[in-house]
Amino acid sequence: MVYVYATLAIVAVVVVVVGWMASDQFGQYIEERTQLIEQVNTMISDIEFNQIEQIDEIEFIREERSKIQQQEFVRSALLAISVLLFGVTLPILATRYFVQRLHANLDLLNDYLSNIGRATSALMPQTFEFKEFDEISETLRQVTRDHGETEQRWKRAEIELISTNSDLIEQASELTKGRKFALSMMEDADNAREELEVTNERLNQMIEQATRATHAADSANRAKSDFLATISHEIRTPLNGIIGFVEMLDETKLNEEQDDYLIRIKSSSEALMSLINDVLDFSKVESGHLNLELRDFSILPMINSLNSMFLSQATEKGLSLKISVDESVPRKIRGDETRLRQILLNLLSNAIKFTKSGDVSLHVSTHSIDSESNFVELEFEVRDTGIGMSPEEISRLFMPFSQGDSSTTRKYGGTGLGLAICKSLSEAMGGKVWATSVLGEGSSFFSRVRVDIVEMRDADALSSESENAKVISSGTINNKVESDKPADSLPLKIAVAEDNMANQRVIMIMLRRLGWESVFAENGRELLDLVRNKDYDLIFMDVQMPLMDGLEATRRLRAGDAGEGLKDVKIIALTANALSGDEARCLESGMNAYMTKPLKLRTLKQAILSLCGK
Image 1: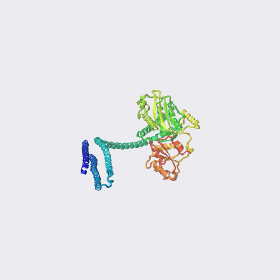
Image 2: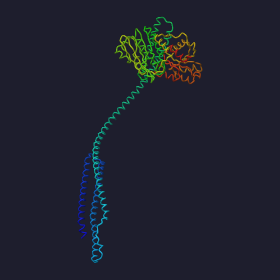
Image 3: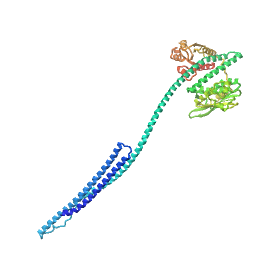
């Protein structure tokens, strides 16, 4: 009865509390599971495209969350069972302990009643000791504490899961938009690729056409170069004979009528040679094969040579030729002397041609000097008092085959190539060319070039250069060959290889005028037989000859085919070719010097003395 009455109320309360807790937890579990299913369905419905990978990922998240809910529900159920067991066990144990004490006191009471008068110290008040329940209560508190912590962790995990779920939904939405954009880009890329393939095909066709056109242009350019080389040689060869004989004839006694005829022939020959040179130079400029030959040279000797060349021509027209050089101009520079002289020749020739009276002047000055880079910009001004030009005429001045006035060609002659060549040469040397003019009063032509400084003027050379400047200004020069013959002081044994009979005659007469005798061969093979094992001091070698040309004959001479004594003989090239690279090929074959036809007596003498003089 004690068990029944003592424990029934407590057990009933415990069962009610535990039942209420279990039902509440079970209802919460069912509600959360329903919410989870609804969220998953929402995520699936938000995805517009059905991809297996994303659905599997969502199912995986759902299973994880379901597993967490199930674990939490199991823990809650275990806690409820623990509370139920504790709530049932504790009253039973307490009642059992109380009943045992009650039995003990009843037994003591029976003993007391049986032994009245005996000591009653055994009837002592008894108290309940709950030490044996401390471990159970501690376990219950630990379980309750763990449950609270687990519930907090679960709530935090739930919040994180909800946040992750939202991020996943946003990423899925962005992925959907990105997929649409990617599909659009892929479509655009496919269209662009198709257009690129069409463009590449057209480009390949254009490249192929351009390649064929380039090959055709190269072939045409090579044919043009070959034609120019051939026509130059073919024209210069007879022209060499004409100019040579004219020069020899000029040294003889002629009457006034014959002298006039000779002057006409000489003028026409020089005009023809100038025309050939202009056409060849313009062709080289036009084809882009204009190469500059840089070497050290002095300014004053070059200016002196120009003065010597034009003084007689200016004097014949009654003009005063004035040439001056500023003191700031370096006296030795590095550049292309030949091309620079060609520019000044064209400018001075034009100035004298278009000037009837007055004077023509050449002034050389320094535009700028860069001491760090060691280069100088020289400015050449050619001024005349000629016919002058209008601004419209100046604008057409430097165009090929063009002159200021169409009537100028008929009145003064010329092709209109000279100034165009000057412009190209000046620009090739890092400068420019321009002109100023007043109609009826005269013109000024300017050419600016850039050259390297080799040597500036020094104090020791000041007096001698001043004297040179005076010589330039005075314009005095002796154009006649000295009366004494250089062969008197320099005896030479000379052989000539030349296939043209007229040119043989010209060279023989020129050499005799200078006091030297010579022997002739018509080709390189004949020359080798002629000079073999003989003592010759100088050989003039024509480049283009039948059977064996001059280049091959020179190589064989240097190899000793004509004897060891002739391996070092001096050889001067004679050629009617005037294209770029001709001189380099001659020097590479072993020749010592290079001369172009037509020959002149003074040039021939200078070449022999500079090569063989002591």
